[in-house]
Image 1: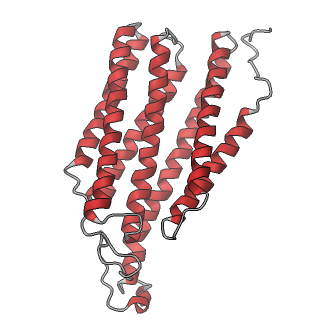
Image 2 (image 1 turned 120 degrees about the vertical axis):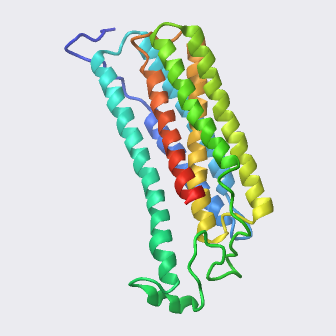
Image 3 (image 1 turned 135 degrees about the horizontal axis):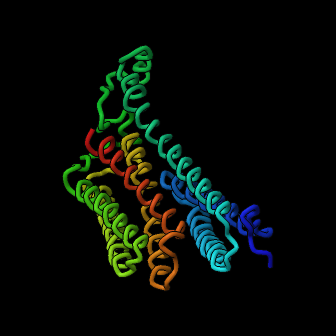
Length: 296
């Protein structure tokens, strides 16, 4: 086996993981779309089965693929050039995630500032009010143009309850993760384990409160995916963020297990840094959600 030199870097052999990941993502996306569309019909068809199958396949691919990367790293196959490649790759991945959420925030902005006012007779395209005469534009949209088919919510979620608590939880988790990272760089593994474990706990508590909020929205407030454009934008934004928090928490658990096993060095721990970047990004997105979905 040829180890990398300062003028070369390790090129992995051909891998079957990318194609399997593509299949898993396709099944997840198709299954999720079919399941959501099935909420307005009598049945969801094969949607849930495809979604679960894709999720299980992706879980296996991610675990196996990352295990391969960890094994190669421990063999000393990665050079400084490979480390830079990983950092650029993670940077572009987070940038793609920024664009992902920017699309949903953009949709929310368009609906609130253009589409709904137009239906209410305001602005350059106010003639759209002819479609539903008497419709009054407001946000949150409690009275939809067609209340028979798409009834609006009875109430909206107060930002000063669970949303505020979840905000404090995620902001605190960023602090605890930073302390854990500092401990790793200084060689204080006990500090790293303690504060990283606390970060995982905060993430899990956030998810529990998020589920509790969803249950209350459906059972008490009439706030569902079918509750007009407000309900759909609310659940799309908070739901996708919740998915990212779930993935981030799982990654933190994996990193914690690796720290316990003695992985990472003070000057060589990009796996830890990559998960930290991702978690801080998720926290920043939640601040935007708290401001533009719950408060404004």
